[in-house]
Image 1: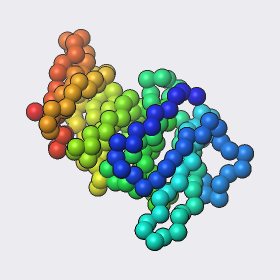
Image 2: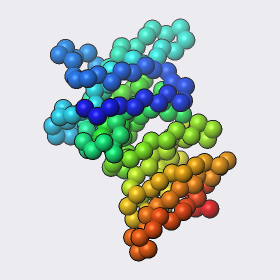
Image 3: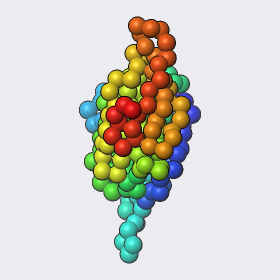
Image 4: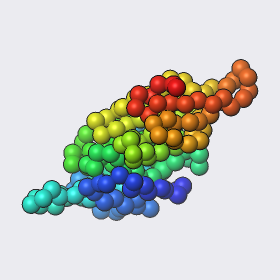
Length: 191
């Protein structure tokens, strides 16, 4: 298995552990993402999640999240990220990104970017950025915040963030060069 990342930049109401393999005895709550995947077990990211309890509430039962593997390529990350909504968790398995509501694990979103090549938390703007081959998608506390237009023919590089502007480069097929771009982090539009 490829090494996994953990990024807890955002405060969160859960703990999670990536397991080296599926446990012999499954917990009473087990969720497979996506539910319709064939052979989801082969190389899947197995995550034991313990949701947090609200004030004065009983601690919820943990659950096992089995996240289907996208690609076995080291360029496609695997790991866990906290999100701006403290009750949601982002699990990435070989570039396939799953956003899971830990309070109601049947609620999840599988991002259409396949593969996600980089996950970048931008805490000061409350965004989790998903960088793909051609564009960037931003997820905020209320869900998808924006998606950029096509930034590259094949390969987006993020260079820096200055205030509300994301600076990067994208390879252009016609010129065979990396061309700079700047995106407004509040809207995703080019600057």
